[in-house]
Length: 306
Image 1 (cartoon, rainbow, N blue to C red):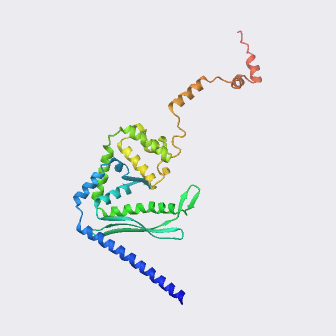
Image 2 (cartoon, helix red, strand yellow; image 1 turned 90 degrees about the vertical axis):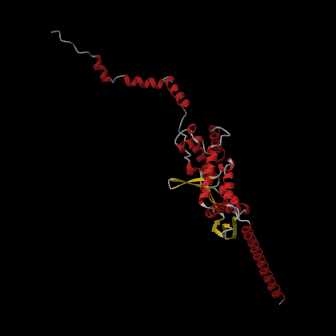
Image 3 (cartoon, helix red, strand yellow; image 1 turned 45 degrees about the vertical axis):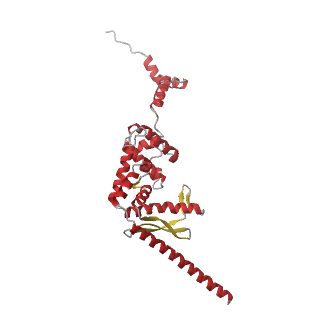
């Protein structure tokens, strides 16, 4: 009887704790909604704050993502730009929650909630505790690896939720402002920025200059501001895990291609190359006539005297 009583008491305590937790969360939500009603956002000031943030070169460089799909390229605002939009829009709650973890998978929810208008977007998704490697699928058992995997998958859903809450014209203005910032970034010449980008591709993703030039179709010396922006978008896409280097670049590009200097050296070497003894003997054999032909050629016909 005492054991049954203790079990019943533990169950009641668990129910009381669950009720207390739910009550606390409810009060926090009510408080957030109350403050949002008391201090509503100024749309014009929020828009101005967003545009001012997009004038920062560091944000503009990571504001867009890009990846190939079906022979075309897909581009749009990155999670970094979406976070800045939500922060400056105001009275907006967003994030990722892990609802459950079982049987080698996690069930999580990404959400964005406008506390003023009570407009909410949420996406529930499942993440398998495994990742694809060169040797096959690898099962993850480290809690840190699992957390990073769920956070990486959740960031894309959070971006979609935020962009579904904030008006589309505000998002378009932010994107245009980021493009202006990149185009007008005269802190260093374009060639230096392109050179730094090429070095970053080689150091971080093992993408050579020849592979990039093969993708664009012309030399890096002819790159414009728009090409530089596209390079940054591709770099951010690979860095965020939205695509892989092989989705954009041909790994065999430039391997069989020789420089002009190397080709000139090879031509000079062929001209200066002396024939070997075997080549001379072979040439003599080709020129020397056969036995019958030699006798015929040696015997000259007599000319008629008449």
